[in-house]
Length: 128
Image 1 (cartoon, rainbow, N blue to C red):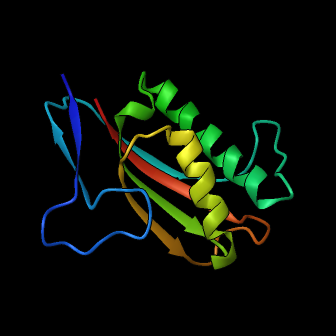
Image 2: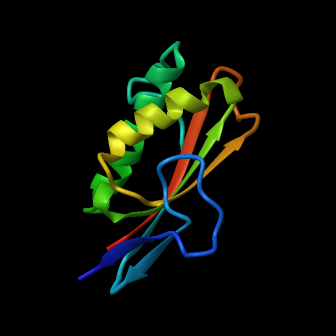
Image 3: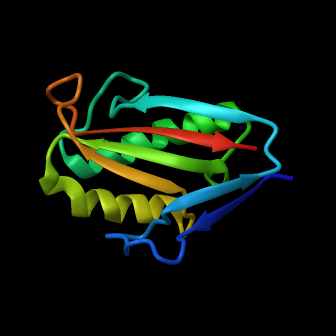
């Protein structure tokens, strides 16, 4: 049975959000490396607003997990790419809602994205 334990070791600096410093994985026999999921819906549309794009990216990420017979409980590491720092608080709120208390290791990077209209992209690693 796979066990994923959030770790925030003594002596490490405090985090600036709701995430651990690390995630310890024990007993995993399968790993899933999820490529960057972008805010494109299955019908090819892209939401106009950041929150809509963020929710679409999470839906796409969940679809990849489902395709591997996994779920959000299997997430070990999530890397989020934001096109603009101004979206950080909305990103955090949507992420907290989507994860429902789960605490994978987390990185958020402010950067340019492949398509100009995309505001968010998320890649992840899961284990089972």
